[in-house]
Every structure is written in structure tokens, then in C-alpha cells.
Image 1 (cartoon, rainbow, N blue to C red):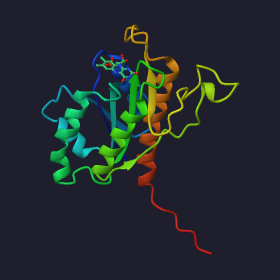
Image 2: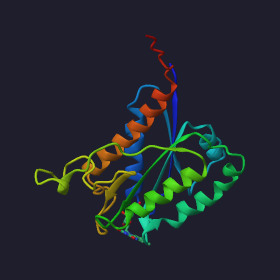
Image 3: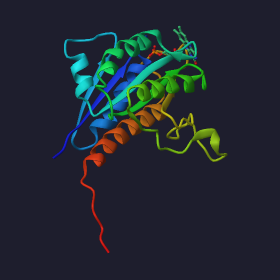
Length: 199
Ligand SMILES: Cc1cc2nc3c(=O)[nH]c(=O)nc-3n(C[C@H](O)[C@H](O)[C@H](O)COP(=O)(O)O)c2cc1C
């Protein structure tokens, strides 16, 4: 059976985005054949870069701070210039997630940071693949998958005064799980031999 090696490279200042990262990992693990590594970019063990270089997909995650990916994540992005110099991540899959206090909070900019980082490395970006929920329709509910309506990556919202064990919401965590599973399934599908149909 083929294996999908998924690395989740994330930062979380106060634990909220770490919960989103754990949800991405749960979703990825739910795909048969997935091997998942959660890597805190501020706690780089000896095999940190080897795991990233050996992954089939890297999912980037960070809180949105001042309208952009957190400085700690950005530091990791700059460190990845070493991998860039040998094109070590070329043709891997990539995806991203972010969490912030505002419903918008300029989260889209953070996801764009991630997509550009992936493009600089020559990676293939995987979108959320879900329709927008909640206020997109009068029938919507705050419990909807993709309630924040992101297409580029998984979005989550945590009230600025809520502890990390109370936020992000279950709906946002399920959205993150969906993204993790979609990434693993995309890697596994890419391994299947093409079927040649002849007339
Ligand atoms: C320095 C700083 C800047 C922030 N900037 C934003 C922002 O631009 N937009 C927003 O919606 N929330 C912003 N927030 C709120 C955080 O995104 C929010 O508290 C998030 O849940 C933090 O995630 P973490 O616990 O993983 O660090 C900011 C928080 C901090 C500490």
C-alpha cells in the first residue's frame, strides 16, 4: 500500500492555531496510508528539515497577526530558502490554514502568503474544496463546514478573549479536518497508475 507523507508546519502563539493544526492532522490520518507529522516551526528538532524534505505534502499554518502570517512563521519561511536553493520541495503538494480573532481579520492575506511561499518552492497548491457556509445562504448555520467561506485555505476564528480550549469552534475544526483529509487523499490519488482507455 502506498503512503502519503504529510507534514504540517505551523506556529501558534497561544494555542488556538495549534488546535487547528491538530485537526488538520486528524483529518489527514483518517485517510488510509497517511503518515502525518506535526511540526512546530519554533521547536525544530534534529530531523525537522529532513521530515519536510521527505514529505509528499506540506501544510502551512499560522495565526494571522497584524494582517499577515505571524513573524515566527515568517522566520521559518525565510529559513526555507535553504530548501529552495536545492529545489528540495519542487512538485510537492501544499495547502494552508490560519486562525484569527476577526471574522475576516485579513486571514486571506495570510493564506496568500502561504500560497506564494508554495509557488516559490514550485509546489502544487490544494484548495479547501468546499462551498462557503453560514451567511452565504439564508439557510446557512454557524455550524456549517467552511462557515467562514475560504477557498484558498482553511479559516478559523477564535474570539480574542477565549482560551484555546474553547476556540476555534467545532465547525472550524471540522473544516480543518476536511482540509487534512483532502491533502492526504490528493497525494494518494496522485500515486494511482493512470488507466488507459482504448477505443
Ligand atoms: C500581535 C497580534 C496581532 C494580531 N493581529 C490580528 C489580525 O490582524 N487580525 C485578527 O483577526 N486577529 C489578530 N490577532 C488575534 C489572533 O489572531 C488570535 O488571538 C488568534 O486566535 C491567535 O492564535 P494563536 O493562539 O495560535 O496564537 C492578533 C493577535 C496578536 C497577538
